[in-house]
Image (tube, rainbow, N blue to C red; front, side, top):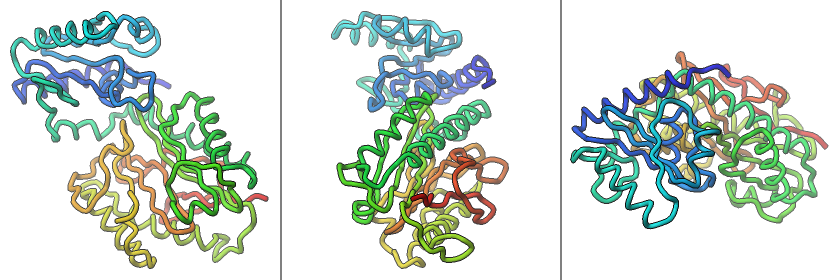
Length: 371
């Protein structure tokens, strides 16, 4: 993969310093693992995938850029994660001394001016929403990394489902998927697996000890470089008579519903327009309350989702944004992560070896039917 990390970091540092000028602040402090990955062009500031804040932070002033971490993590971060010309501020790992020294350093670096922060503590100001939204359109270098994450995530899901057997438990399928993700260098943010019985009742739920039976539904979110790629796939263990054009009734219904939402994903449209498009499509499909019962996805990126689609999410879709929606019906669901680029949606999580059909000019996954 070829991208210039130093150039990307320099671009983002200039962007952050523009925020300092705009807000008349002395320093910008980024505590969250999502913001750390964004600022460092894909580095991980945490060894725990469920942590909101990690073992390292970013601090930017008008004339300096720091990595704040402790002595227990600094060597690994320097050698394996963080690239670029950062100044390292390393404190002892033990509490409360680490917290005291770090807070003193941050306030001194700010020079008596306010400190902006993504997750503000005492004496810090919250980073305004309008500035938070500036990270949502992804740079070309970020898009390159995202394509790699999506490709590997799709391959992992395919591997797990092709290996599955009807007597497997949901937990066994989830374990196979997690193993396939980790073997490709991806972190499993979540892995949901459901069999025929539980999917009808819960649709999106943690895997249980129940057997898969006739149907296996797998949904996952995988992360690398801080970027989250989501998708879902299905496998049926007995053949189903196709409704038309070789497509089963369940696939035809869910893909037609999804197409309504994806058609609404245009630059300049509000995210709420996609939500309302889904709402109308569910009503047409005889499932009018589904958007109130299940989350539907939204804008993707360094969190899953970055912004959830709702009736009043008026954020405007822009070139370079990533989108992931997961519409669901009682017997089917579908999800992929797309990049909005050049006026089109580009599927980041497409597996060319998975059975698919063209819907509205987009290649969409079908249910894999193998005995």
